[in-house]
Image (cartoon, rainbow, N blue to C red; front, top):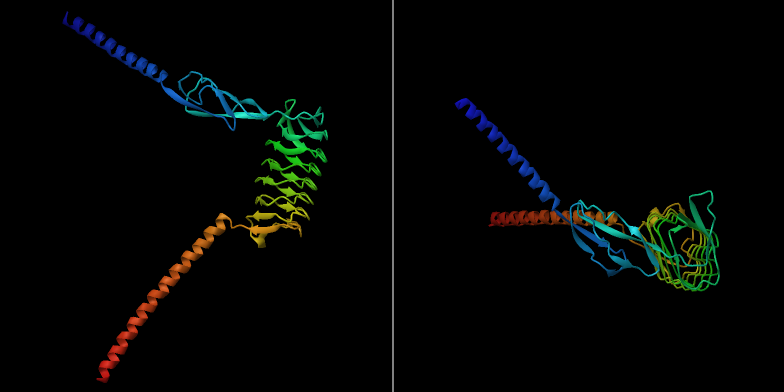
Length: 318
């Protein structure tokens, strides 16, 4: 009887332990399911209309995207999913320009991309060029596409463009501002020739070549920075830019061979020290200071020795 009783007791203890383990596991699962994560929505230049930009969401639950808007653009989507959140995350708005009416594209029938072929000359004011047309990526602006569009004041370009062709914006005499996207590698000759109202120009890292007379006659340009990625600048690229200061972070004796003689035209060149050059200068100054300090100590020692010798000589005379 005693052995039978002990056997039942062991079974009860085993079930008790099993129940305890299962209870702990279920409790952990429950607590884990209640874990909260932070979801932040980045408007990326947009404006909040409604909703919350920062949300605390239980694991596995969905965040609720806010209502947002941006002038001249529409929301193409978000950078990552807002559903079934399992970690802290920042979700960025992806905007697409509402492309200005009056722009003609290549048909792209046998390609997965299109290019801007031409624009109607009556275009006025700000022009928005999206990254897509009919779900196809826009990769280039063809030669003369916006030539003589004298009413354009500003052009917005998105990343994705690779080439801006010859005379693409030539004689756009009202154009005041443009930023070349970082994906553009080539600016054609005469690309912005005679854009005599152009005041602000941004050239991003990634640009490789600037064509002949690309910015000739842009007399209102005051300052631009040429990125180190540029390997080719053809003759007269900045001819007639008499008020322009061109800043470059390349030593004068190391200018790329592809930079033609007279590339800067009438513009002034200002050479800026790169970070590596500044570090080198600091190291040289530090070394020089240490050497000067060392020399000073030696001089002091020599002076003391001279004073001792002079004193000994005087004692000898006495």
